[in-house]
Image 1 (cartoon, helix red, strand yellow):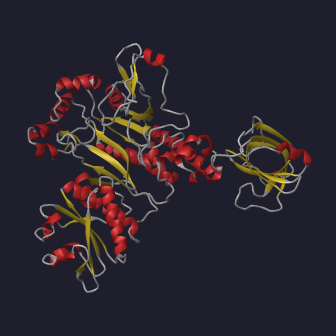
Image 2 (image 1 turned 90 degrees about the vertical axis):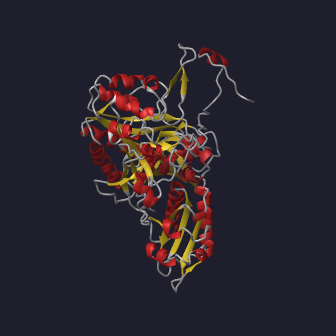
Image 3 (image 1 turned 120 degrees about the horizontal axis):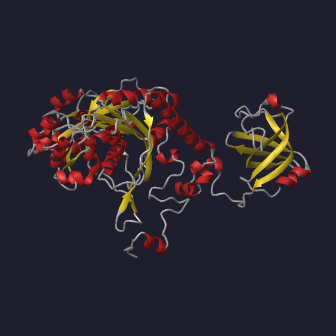
Length: 590
């Protein structure tokens, strides 16, 4: 070792006994045994080493020092009498001859115990994140993240991709989320935007003659937090390929990401490549989600036609989706809890029936199913001990509610959730358009820069017919890992005429396209190559690799759920002269 130490706190072994060494780190714990005898645990980035204080001089050197003070210890390595097989350094200890304080901890009360920081309140952890990161268990996630990013860079480079950085200050672009805006001092009343993604820049690189591009790109979106999404900023493996098809992109990412899951994942089993392709419509029909967790072996079944006219009001004229579990032994209280949880998560009610030991339908809404019992039992393959939970409503509502039922049943009823694996698939053939829930108008379903399947002809054939427009699929695809969307991509719309026509369908004319995307539209008019790409989320992939449930556990300095950096105090007020410089006047209600 260089600098002020000869060894780190994780490398000394029995073979080093008799050596004089210098180690440095944080005082993790001190346990005094008598007036001039103490055990001290010293911790650094690499591990811990026990230091045994045996003299009055060395006791005076550590007297009054608070835990987490940084010190330098020079002494002799010797074999421990009471060894600790759980520690790499558990066979040795260091007897100090010199102890020097390098950085004093001035607080005798820490906000939490370092090695138990994950048990503390999350806001406290984030406020004192520099202490939280001293916990080896927390630090390990960040180390894994670094190693994963390094491996991805290596694999992408080996595939012939160039790492190219794109601008952070750019123009506002309608990409689905709210922008973070930056006032332009030299251009009063105008703003830069932080990029929601390098989408336009990477497509422009393809028109510039670069063949394969990637970067570990920071992206900025003013979105609310979720367990699997951090507010403010996130990182993605942004990649694009010229003269490429959908299969080119998917096979490339399989060659990059599968080895990463195999090498760094918590679970040993990873879906073999090529990964399964499931159409969006099939995913919604069978799993009730466009990001299905394939570790669950349950699927949705449609009983709409069978239960029509049975007399149960919510079924009339509705789509009815059912999820069946056989050999069901849970009590009525358990079922009531399931139904309540479904309603909380979806705002929709579910209903149920069971099959008793005599093969009769019982409980729940069984009294309504008498006349259709035979068809109902045959359709679902029911037998004594079967349990059926159902959702009804408009097709999309029934699908999504039943998808939640599927997940809850799969994870709560033993035998249906094979957790310790990475079950990976591609969701393909997304709709090009959808009806906006708030606007009630036709909108792009996913990425507006995607090529519609069928190209210009598909748009011309559907023009003016909402149902036909909603039936157009796009060359879009998502990577789903254990129920999490982990990448999104598309074959791009590189033809300006098709682009204009696609935007016309949502009420935007050619002038709107030119105004909103001037660089891309202009570049495409100079001969653009067909190109395709995707963007796997680094934060989410590392979260999956670590087996964490919160994405904040794999980000070095995350914001809290309210998009606040409690450690740095951001966001914060600024001085009036700073506002004056960028020509901004505040209109904030008290």
